[in-house]
Length: 203
Image (cartoon, rainbow, N blue to C red):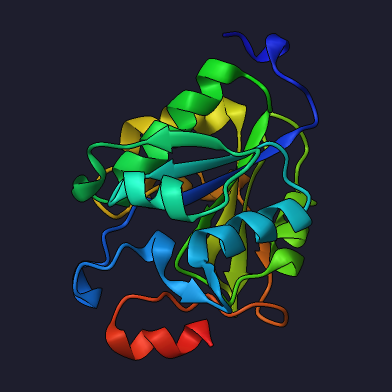
């Protein structure tokens, strides 16, 4: 669908929550408990409070369990049967659904396994939205991280280059001149929950 048909000014939240937690003994990251709630609920709440609407959630590992156990009311749920191929496949699935529905002209991509990235960081990156050509990312001490803001003009390019666990990394590197970095180190911790030792981040 053409960019003119998109809902100009709306930034959708795109939560990537498909990971199987291989280094966590196969515990799907979306269902890790944080303060009595599945981690995916926390991630959805963060992007909503940061100003994103609608919210898309890409599910993969144990998707049926996640749908049953997590309250994802009001979210657009996107199944990624190829989640085992890495985060890139989930990003492609989410962007494809966003393009199909055409209900936003930018997407703010957040990862379910970064509980230290809260609504303040999301709001800062979202504030860099300037329409479908927008391209921005959180920065932590000058190092690029998540969340990442992708205007609709970039979705096809990102989807073509997203593979493995690189996500949008290659595309952002190639378009560094157009990328706005938004410093968030003072309000967020980008550490990932990847290993049993990282579970302390959920406290």
